Length: 88
Image (cartoon, rainbow, N blue to C red; front, side, top):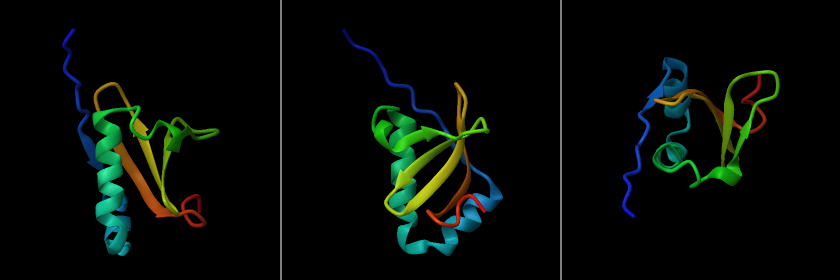
């Protein structure tokens, strides 16, 4: 049986891009993890959790947290920050 995985496009908000630029040394690793999750939801399923009191989700990449909203058609990254600062 053959099937094709559908990769969801990843969109970054202006604030998320600004956050990524601040942490340039981790930028490639974070983007790669988000792209892998977009291509295959099971790739980082143990590092993704639903946010309490919000419709968003969180991806853990080392000491960084990526906050995003996921629909059937796309993933929108809203925030990228170190663990202690992401929820401020």
